[in-house]
Structure formats: C-alpha cells, structure tokens
Length: 107
Image (cartoon, rainbow, N blue to C red; front, side, top):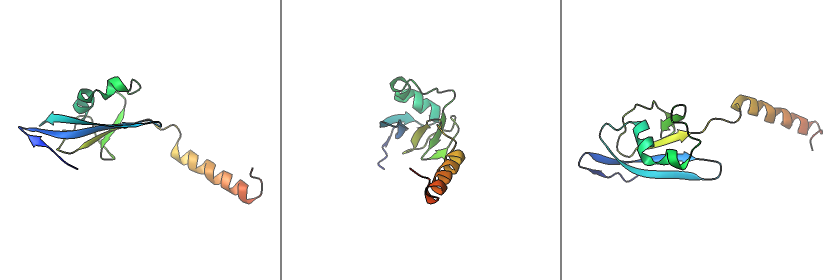
C-alpha cells in the first residue's frame, strides 16, 4: 500500500461494507489522530446512517481495536456491522441440514 507522509500528516483508509457495496475512503490525518476521529472526519457516518459511532465495533486491518487508538501511516480503519446470526448456531443448522440430506430427507 502506498503511504504519503508530509508535514506530520499521513494517509489512512476508512472502510465499511454492506451486503450491497464496499466503501474505502482515503483520508489525510495528523500524528495522534485516533481511530474514531478518522471515522468521524471521513464523512462515512453521513454516508451510512445505520452506523452508530457509540456502539459500532471497529478495527485496523481485520483486528479489533479500541476507538481511542492512535493511527499509524497506512492503517485501514474498518467499521464492522453487527452479526445477523450467531456463527455457532449457523454451523449447527448447516450440519443438521447436511445430516438430513444424507438420510435422504432433503429437498
């Protein structure tokens, strides 16, 4: 990834995805800018009204992070949507459906 660092500013990205689209916004920030400050400055909260900045889970490059973490050059801030289904329950359901198919009861 290309990083631009000039006069104590550097580039980061703010990313958010819905089932229909993915948005990655480049943003110039200064030293000491926190994760939540980058989200607020990016304009993404206005673009996606469903994002609640008080409750949303966030991270940097796929790793959960606190909102007050200072960013480094080239960081990609990610805003995570809430899970629709519990992953464990979804796996159990798929496994049960698979067993039904093997018994000849699928369809």
